[in-house]
Image (cartoon, rainbow, N blue to C red; front, side):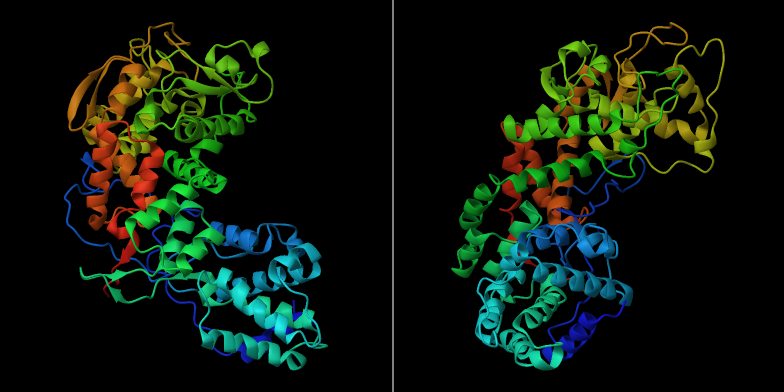
Length: 570
């Protein structure tokens, strides 16, 4: 679509001259706060704990020109301009039209998408008086040059997350000066629209550049206060700094751990921090679109109480649980596995053996039986997500606990393993026995019988929709939940789900995995060896007890890795 506005924008691009280039994003493995999450694989040989525990002092290399993730882009546009959807494109979120988050150089197609979205946003802002006030803080008079110059300085400061250089101001002023030539009528409104477009396609807006080269005395570079402010805001909020953080940056008050600490503590009181903590726990749980959490199906003959409408309710309950532990309770890692608090409505009450007549459609906080329901792994959301169509899945549940909770890499299934049929037989009267026989082959037994199956067998106390069960529904055979679960390198006898949850809560491996995932997520890089010191420190604090999730988040801002950088070597 080529419109008169497109012509303005092309001309404005030439009038502005070079405002930088959108370069490589080497570090996008994967994005962390506000975007796609880092991958959760543990790495290493089968049965090995994920990530190195060896602490080698140093700063992990980080891209100097990391692009905004799509989620960060949407939040940044929202907080800068008040735009949450594109009226010209069916009211979708702006990032819907951008390329997916990815590493490497920006392709021509990706660059074209940024320009198209910027064009839509600029037109929408200038057409809406309420939105326009978010861009223009003054009313243009005469040729509008004075107001637009002030806008360049004020809006540019917010959009670039730093004050503009004199050269940048001059280039944007050039657009204003050429207004009659690059717009249809040369009105201040038309020029302002071209100006806004130029800001939105500038590399200094699209990228979070960290280019200060002030030696830190240890072989790295100390970030400037403006770069620290950007790291803080995108880690804790997934968006631009607010006025208070900008002021601290402008005054050079983000150079010491104590100064950063004061801002981090303030920022965690903002609702946007809750959104970030929630996003981390979705990553920790692998909860989101196109995951097991939103794809559950059940045999209606075996599980008539299951309905697809329950999926979103169970996911919301899970998220409410993590928010409750982190913010309402001020709890820590251990409470995630031990708390009997749940959020239930009339639709999910039967899954917990509660009377639906006592509930409405809204989720209501309740305290469940701590013997049957300690922690998030005993909630209907997880149990449904990690079950099969017509039965429970000790393998799926066991893999999650082994890999994602304990950080142990169970290895890759051998070819054809997924097609191994579930055996039948008169003596195979429980799902546990059938799965045990299914995985008894030489190619499967080492991983399944030592690592994967045991925690999954403990979780057989819950059926495929998450109800507590003591006997197999199809045969009446008693459910056996006793297993030797490999925790912290050794097999440990576990008698029940509550016993397993207590042991996971106390497990250094599980504590380390939680800390490792936080570091990967917050620092937007996956399991770098030079982050091991930070992971070890956080793990030690979790182990000591009395250490809240929010304490951990704040401490992520206190490590040397947060306020310094090392250039990635070619």
